[in-house]
Image (cartoon, rainbow, N blue to C red):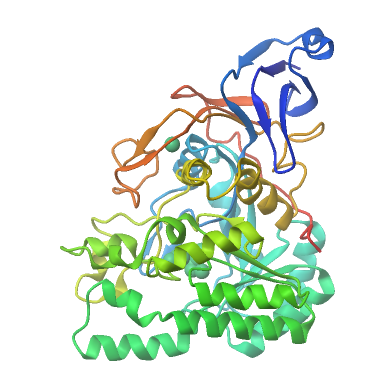
Amino acid sequence: MSRTRISNGLVVTAADELRADVLIDGQTVVALAATGSAVADSWQADTVIDATGCYVIPGGVDAHTHMELPFGGTAASDTFETGTRAAAWGGTTTIVDFAVQPRGGSLRAGLDAWHAKAEGNCAIDYGFHTIVSDVTEPVLKEMDQLTDSGESTSFKLFMAYPGVFYSDDGRILRAMQRAADNRALVMVHAENGIAIDVLVEQALAAGRSDPRYHGEVRRELLEAEAVHRAVKLAQVAGSPLYVVHVSAGSALAEIATARDQGLPVFGETCPQYLFLDVDKLAEPDFEGAKYVCSTPLRPREHQAELWKGLRTDDLQVVSTDHCPFCFVGQKELGRGDFSKIPNGLPGVEDRMDLLHQAVLDGRISRRRWVEIACAAPARMFGLYPRKGTIAPGSDADLVVYDPAAAHTLSAATHHMNVDYSAYEGTRVGGGVRTVLSRGAVVLDRGRWLGRAGHGRFLRRDTCQYL
Ligand code: URP
Ligand code: ZN
Ligand code: ZN
Ligand code: ZN
């Protein structure tokens, strides 16, 4: 068993900042000790990583990705191999992706299909939520089994995308009732898809076919309304609720109200809603299509609300909803009809850097950075303290992060398998230096040392906030 010591860094977790050395034995963190102390200096190690001037943080946990997701007649352009490698380049060492129940099929069939895509291909550890597209009695029983076994303890239901993933309120209520019994976590895509489809049809009939109309028809009111309804359904069912990709201030307000009432309601937002705004959808020459995702980008004033929500803990998690489609050949499927643009943005590689920039900008503290990007997603989805922190017994998923390694986000240099960057030209003040996944150095000073197949499937606990 090889031992690695990471010396002289500032260890930052959601709870603490410590000048400490970290000792790793094999795949696991075994000890922390004050830098320069007799204890730390007594450690024998095969490898010493000098982290002088750097932070030592837990590897990022991105609890919302869609590698290889079939969507809109095409599939997300990152495979589990390319997407998990890109994640590691950006300091993320765990993803939780979504296995999709085939319509008319079982959750088991969806999970089997996603295991087949991921197994042997991932550079970092991974888990699966399950997208429930058809709530039936057998499916509810499967939810019990999957939660018990830890294979999937969280289930996403869609109030959007009629005819694709959509569930009506009755089906969502049934899934929530089941979750109240079996301790699973129901995740909801909260947009009123039935009303949105009417507005889509009307926009297209009026000749409004450009990408910017995607932002107009997916009205803020219809996000807030759906969040409100989801909260009430969860309240009736007595279940917890996790609202994914919150983009609107008014939707966040519904979550804040529920939390003020003491309800177990949780919220996630994504870098695109914190750093980009609806003007992107109006970029000329169809370039706006690069920014088509759902929920949509909102006017700039929503960003301040979302940052506030992150500070007040009305939003607990920032994940990426990484769902990349190339501009050429994929986003272009929607030329002349914005509703045919595959929905989703790339970002799995950019999240840690962008959120660190928010630290430099004084929006959040360093510890809150680690909390929203590592610890809270790990707790939310039953992976803590194995993931999301640095403590004896934790997996040695660690990032040596250089807060002074400024660089520019660009498709020319990123590792995601997509032909554009949503953040092209954005300067970020820090950067990843070294990344360890279960004790193995997978990335060091710009050199890729990882391998497809190192990453293992993670069984998960139920939500650790409950
Ligand atoms: O636009 C998005 N978000 N695409 C991925 C699917 C989803 O709704 O999360
Ligand atoms: Zn969604
Ligand atoms: Zn998603
Ligand atoms: Zn970077």
